[in-house]
Image (cartoon, rainbow, N blue to C red):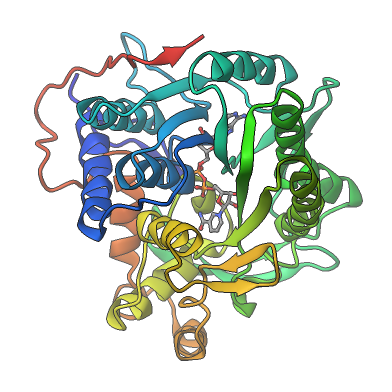
Length: 397
Ligand code: NAI
């Protein structure tokens, strides 16, 4: 199949297997260039392991820690007429890297929110890795059906009052003002159900109950806070309420794990990056375009892989890491530096359609977005035919 990008708003409905593999290899090479993480976890369960921060966590675990991994994700394998989703191709590529170094690598594809699927994962985990010393929770999903069969949809809306802000139409490269209407109580409740800590807590309690957590096991979930320009839609919006719930859950899980296995629960507050999940948040693509130009100019820019390597090195190898209390680490420290955010504010006040490309890294943002789907990789010939059906060797039912 000859595969070209087909972008529909904030998603691309095609993905290129060779481009995804190149992007995974590039991230693996970064980890190799930084050196091994000898004291890091040895058996890692990653929930949401196929793209974004979860994929980076799996690459750092596999390549940097030589850890055995069990990855859970929700991806499309592709069929005769359609390529697979990028997370599928990413996993096939990382599996090859793991196999080449003899590192155990197992995957399961399904709905991590479902009780039935959780039971299957627990059984397969017992039969493969046995127990785990680290659980990464990196799910980002638009909806969740809970164990009682209730379906909740998350929304990205401000809370309390409407919010008017600049944003960018990424197809047309146009900056315009948008007004986002405030969430209802039901919207807030539903978003907390999907992106709050309830499902994370279900996973950890189940794993503990099944004696699958080792002594001193750590669990980490990812969060975001960001600067004031995005607070109405992020930190103070529906998603921020869900993240506040995630933080409370971390406190409860920390106490629970301490008692059960002398373990630890953590929230890592990460930097803004381009992922499938973040592309869907209003205002954020424009903020990222502005931010990336400033951080790149200052030599401070990081993507998922640099962030997660820094997290693991800080947590497990005593490299410098900004901590806040017992359960929170801040990888967004460079993004939130006053010298970065003061410039963001200046540019934000001036940016418009005419100066979008000169004042921000909009071109870099778009390239970054297409790379999530395996496009815009310099080493790939996109006019060439490629095998689009790529089986996974260690995919369990
Ligand atoms: P992403 O969209 O790249 O990855 C989501 C992952 O969840 C994928 O592996 C996908 O297969 C999996 N997934 C989705 N629904 C699932 C389901 N029902 N069952 C099993 N797997 C499912 O997202 P991203 O951005 O890496 O987000 C991960 C976490 O990082 C989220 O908590 C997010 O809030 C957080 N974060 C993201 C930032 C960003 O700028 N992208 C910044 C800071 C934190």
